[in-house]
Length: 174
Image 1 (cartoon, rainbow, N blue to C red):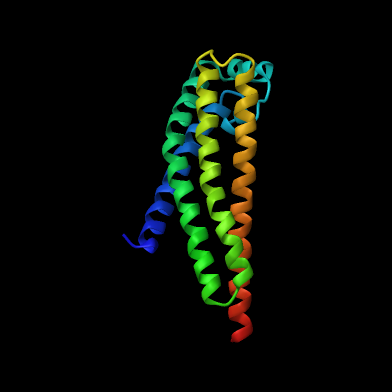
Image 2: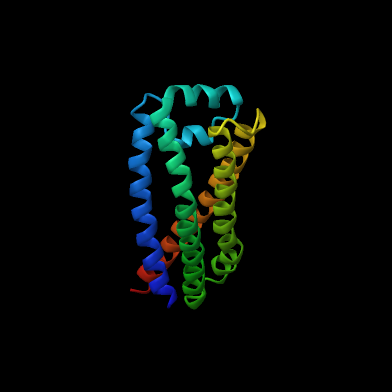
């Protein structure tokens, strides 16, 4: 499979999974509690217990489904972002943007680190949902979520900045 085809396939799969996860998230917020991101960032055992109480049984079931499906989602978005950064890095190098291209070598692995942190976060959140993980479970999940969001923010900023740099380079030559 070519990188281009892999990017399209992973991009479409990521988008479809995002839509499904958003629908499941709606089931959580319909209970009056936060969505899954609020649970990811609960930080304390008390806040996590409060969220679980707000959700009730149907919200907890939705959260459990969301977390299990997220394992597939993090695989698709992690691979998509990793390949996207590598493709952009190569395109920047071909256009003589060597500094940005070199930076891509450091940014690409952050997509995989972010996805790995998402997986670890999911494990701890599933433990919390199951009444395990003690008082440390929410804090550990929030720590992994924070690293995930930081890594993915850097990846997205690189992609946007790199695309902007390519657009500006193309406009300057026209």
